[in-house]
Every structure is written in C-alpha cells, then in structure tokens.
Image (cartoon, rainbow, N blue to C red; front, side, top):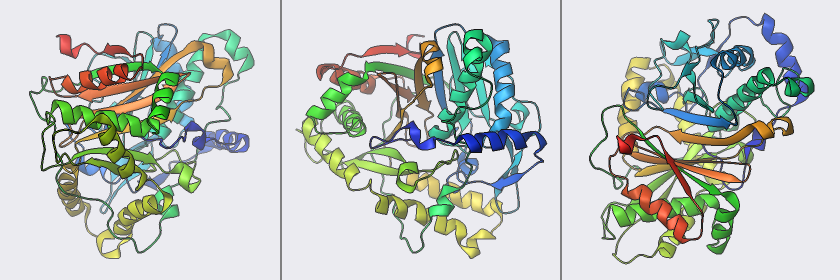
Amino acid sequence: MENDNKKNYSSLTGTVNERHKRQKTRRTKKTNWQKLDNTANLFPAIATHTMTNVYRISVDLDEDIDRAVLQKALDMVLPDFDTFNVHMRRGVFWYYFETNNKKPPLVEKESDYPCRYIEPYANNNYLFRVTYYKKRINLEVFHVLADGMGGINFLRELAYQYLRLKHPEIAKEERDGLSDATSLNTEDSYLKNYRKSHAKGYKTARAFEVKGEKLLAGALGVIHGIMPLDDIKKVCKGFDASINEYLVGVMTYSVYCECLHRQPCTKPVVTCVPVNLRPYFNSMTTRNFFVMVSALFEADRDDYTFEEVLLKVKNSLRSQINKENLEKLFSYNVSNQKNLLLRFVPFVIKKLAMRFVYRSSARAGTTTLTNIGSVEIDDAYRDYIRRFSTMISVSTGQNIKGAVVSYNGELVFTFASTLADVSIQKHFFNLLAKHGIQVTIESNGVYYE
C-alpha cells in the first residue's frame, strides 16, 4: 500500500476512451477468469483469522452516511471494476479469480474491529467489504485483490457515486460513470516487467520484535495522528529527508527509545516499507504492484540521537529505492512462479512451502510503515469530502504497524496495534510535536475500555 518518493495517485490515471469502452462492454460481459498476480498468490496461503492481510481505506464526508444510498452506489459502481467484481477459486496448481455474478455485498454499519478476516466463501464470495459509521465510509480489502492504489481507485468512485445520488446539484454537473482519472487496467505488471536472472534480494535475518501484553482476542487498537501537510514538509526539509524517510526515522527512534530503552541490541530494528512500482515502470494497473524494502537500524551503542538514527534510515532506504534494485526484488519472486518444476507442483504442497518461507521471512521485520500518498479529488466533490485515512492489519512478528495518506493539505498517520501498551505511539507523536508539527489525536477507544 505504498506510494513513495513524491509519487502520487496520478499514476492510476485512465483515459476517457478506456472508460467508455469498458462501460459499453461490461453489460454483455460473460464470466471470465484470470490468474492472481505474483504478490497475490501469497495471501491466500498465509491468511488466517489472526493474520488477515486486510487493509482499510476510509473517507470522511461532511454529512452522516445514508446506508440505502451507499448500497445503491456500490451496486452501480462495482460492475465497472473487474479487479473487485470477482470471487476466488482454488485450482490444482494455483488459486484464480472468476467473475462474480452474485449481488454486491451488503453495506453494513460498522460494529466490529477494523481489518477483520474476510471469509472467501461468505459475503456473496466477494473479497472486500463496505461499512459506514456516522460520516465515514470504510472500504476493507483482502490484499489478494489489490494494493492501496487499487483500493483508493475504487473507494474514490464509490464516494463520487454516493454524492451524486445524495446531491442533485452535483448530479446536474457530473453524470453517472467513472471519472477520467480512474483506471480500469487489470494487467499483471509483475509479469509484464519481469527480467530474467535475478538473485534473491530479500534478507531473512531475524529482527527485533515488539512484544508485550496483548489486547483482547480479535481487538485492534487504532490511533490516528492528524497533522497539517505544510508542517511536516517544513520539518522534513530541515532534516533533508522525504516524508517517508522522516516518518520511518521517527518510528525507528521511538522503538529504540521505548522498547530497547536506548540500549544495544544484537537484533536490528527493521521497518518494512512497501514501494509503489507504477511510477518506475509506467504502469496503470489496479491490481497489486509493489515490493517491500527495509530500513535497517542496528543499535550497537546506547547514545544514538534522532538525527543519527534518521541518517541511517535515509541511507538504508536510498540505497534500495531505485529502479534496478526494485526490478531485482520482484523479478526474483516472479522467477519462482515461472519455474516449470514449481509450476506443476500441486497447490496443497505449494501452500505449505509458502507458509514456511513466509514465517521465516516475516520475522525479518520489526514493523511496517506504508504510505499511499496524496489522494486527488475532482473539483465537483471537494466541498463534500473532508478526510481520508488508512490502516493495515498486523502480521507475524509485527504487532504494531503504521499507515499514511494525505488529502487537501492534511496528512493522517494511523497506528494499528494488538498491544495494550501505547508507549511507541506516544513517543512518536510527542517527537513530531517537539519538531514543531501540530498533531491532533483520535482513536477507536480500545485503550479506554
């Protein structure tokens, strides 16, 4: 769910001709099937009720949500999106997608914790859910469908259609149909851009793990930090860092101070950072197209300053985020998928192997920080849309994660955690405030129960 290095949502821009062609043909479209993309193949093998691989993107409007209207909007928008209008089937060798001809999933009022497991054979077999709470619309997506860019692509159109139905003044100017800025591209950009002969690029050495007392089973603690984008840009300029580098540095330093207590540790603090590949490979796909890089900090002494930690984080990320290295990372994964010997291994055996490999590699990260960048909204809807936010579920060895999105001059940083202790979150936001960033805190109330 990443959009790094000053790349933004514009990388999913579509064309008017593409939009009209899709809308004209979808009404007569027969049931189609497609392979999962390279990254998506992993998620069905490792997903469980405690490691859901579900992310959430939310949009806050300036009015309470009308469930019936939101349902109608979903019914109207979903058929346009081949990426979301599918269900998953298991073949002999791999899972695959097939067009879902059932009714769209029911929109429900939010009544449970976010990022819960999405049962593939419930919910009319759809792999996403739409909920609402007061003024907020939530889209939760099983990562097998799409990354955060694809999720934003869908949620934005859902919000547009909802607002057109609610407000006649918008409907007069904006007809039903997709925005010119919305892509419907479903190519597997991993396969398209794959290059042969790449060695393994991922490290599997064990990282420091943040542990502690857990919240109740199934609970997820959520804390949002809302801040002016200009504030954080000014601070980042002073540290000669990008927004991502700065936030990863603050996260790393918070773990160093609150968990390592500024003491040396034999295991590094590793922050995993998903990188959106679309800008590097001229892709418009709405499916998954990202790789993970890692910001590594080795605490070999007890007196590191924030500036020193940030410098190590910057050097670590900058050495990895370049087209050549990113290509190497995903090409290694694709090469395994294309291996003839592995291709015809029954899926049951593949699943066991993927779980084993994942468990060993998952322990190589302390936390994850993902940034889906800046969301752009058409002028006709700006006065009705207040804020976007996003969060990701926790995973093996990573009990706390961060997610970032910005919109209309505001950046929202969201922590999701299964730990009862919030010392990392407090240190993180206190350090932002110390640097001159005005932060407003909101939470889902878990820590007050």
